[in-house]
Length: 249
Length: 313
Image (cartoon, rainbow over all chains, first blue to last red; front, side):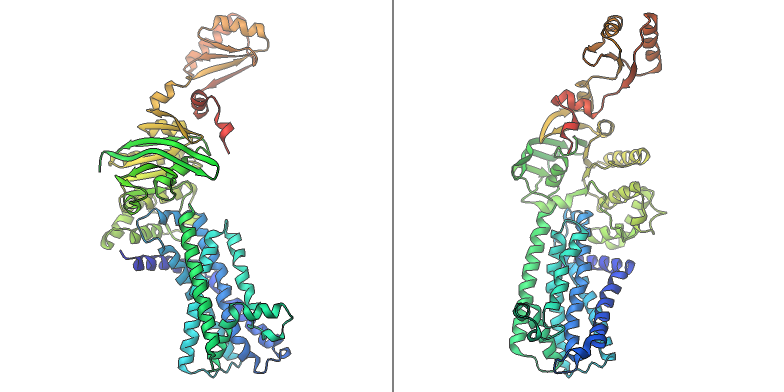
């Protein structure tokens, strides 16, 4: 039996979990949508960003939708580890990473559902992107890559945490980081210190890449920085996951 | 593969400065039940984790099913089944789905999958609960489901880490029957327990683990012969009464400080009545009276000179 088909068996398990406990997906979809509505409808007029605020905020909320879903992934992975499920798989003659791959793919798919909801609501609120089909593909590739990279990092956090509660907490920085990026307001409107942080943290070039694709004018330096950050996060997450997976017994 | 299902020599493991296993040697012939007996914190789970490839040893040669656990971990995993200390079932899946998951991951041909699942559900009396989520199962049912999952794919060597800890007496007996049936099919069982009676009931050979060393190995009979048998403990109010009682009760041994007298007895009503009658005859009365059957504490006291309480963490 190949490791791919074993990963698919694990993914089916994750799907069943989601079907049995749909609140996790509901939560992952609802929160970004509510935030989108709040920022655009309630606060949007107070921000002067040079373009329609909905057009500015949607890419940021797409990223937030990815990050917000990670808490559930960290908790699920940790629950598998603390309840002995991972040990059960580890003593079986199966692919070592299958259970983790299943979690990462489930996490990415949950992200995509949340993003679809965010984009749908954004259109309802007057979102008017000028992206071509190719640009949309760029957006899709970017969010899948981002979901994949942060997914592996979250799996590592979930494995390293002592309990599901601390695992959920460990993912909080990933949910907070977008607020200190150009997701909601441009970095140059922030105070000193926060501004520098926002300019150099990984999520800013990723959001700017999404924003670039959605306005049909992606900037090469942002795209390259975004790709480099995603590759780096994915590698760190993957190898950290693998080593924690091997060590934790 | 030779006739040893498990062969361990010179196994050592330390966590930092704390030595957990300090040179373990043991051998388990195929088709037998071996029980590792010891209190909490003795190193039982660490031993199981190392033998099942979950953890690496610091030193020692460990062969399971004829394969080296480090160099041939994959082959070892293909031959073993492991049921850990806490039932590792997926609570968000039903009993049936848990078993099907194991089938999907094993080398059981897909067309046989349904039959294998149905047979295991039947054998473990879980058929009625099969469509229910495992989170609704009782402790005993979870353990049974856990063991059923371990049996998918027909492992020849099964590790059971404290399979009955926390179970009610009835579920415990069910578990024992299941374990006996497995051995009848030729499976080798490596069982850890903190209960002497469990080792006594099931094991062909028992090894007692204490502070990372095997302090005794042998058949359950061998071990029990090293322990004082069932006896009656009498406590008296005064030293003179104790002395009088010691004189009339043959084979008794007294503890002057605690004012207690230990009298060998089979614990049956006949011999107890005879004992009490004899005290009555000499107008002696004890303040308290207790029948004591040997347990793990006694084995430990006899083998190590200290009780399990001291080591329990």
